[in-house]
Image (cartoon, rainbow, N blue to C red; front, side, top):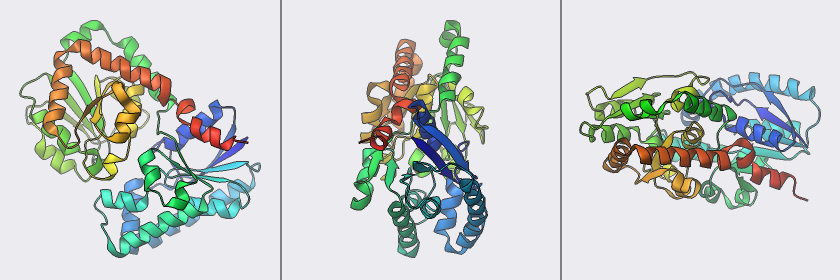
Length: 370
């Protein structure tokens, strides 16, 4: 089967569609890419959509990328399936125009309207109507809709729900490689003598609950835990305000994507998300898949999708509860045997279920059915 991965996606910023492509290749499919990155991240795109006066700028940039995509697509062999990459709300419409009789698979990892609500960019009115219309149009253009959890499938309109398949986010191969390299370099003496090293990385959106993390650090009362916070965003100031002032929290505004796996793999614990909003209760964030592949122990919120996906491979705490998170960190800091057990459980789950070939299996089964 010949699959064309199509659109303005950027796998360096959002590896999701790259994981799907690698998984399809692992199943023997001929996967080619027709890609011209737009140069805007999720925050930039959603901010433009939530501010209608900025939409013409988005459309102008998009038009230039579409011209390049259309020219490139004409030179490529006719695909059996077109996969439109993450943040493809507009790209899927171009794909439908260019490939009228070809099945179109849309990686609908986020809803524009849902993301705007979660990031407090739009809660109702005309903006939400516009964003819902964009979502609905994208879903109508797709033959198959790929989502990441059963909860996200249930949130789709009924007509799209019937065409949806759940493909967990998973982790790229280079995260597994970084985990193996870090494990080979680590010594037992390092593990015993050093403080518990913890890492969080993200865009500091409400979904992620960064202030909960730093409030938990403030509640540890001298326990030997060191936290690295990577990234910045709308909750950055609140997270810094809640943090202890004893030097136990290190702040990095940015780490290059190519270096991030090794940085994360150098820590004992990778933190997931701790927000309490509706979207936070429906997702399994990429950082728990990546952290597990990197060989870290995982701590994240106890929600339906995360409990179902991670099971005993993670320490689960109530969403929005810094005291519970502090207790979980304290236990791993004081019981290195439990820390080692949780690292092994996370790595085993990643090797068994979170690699590209494994997560993409439901989509492969759908595409090859009959």
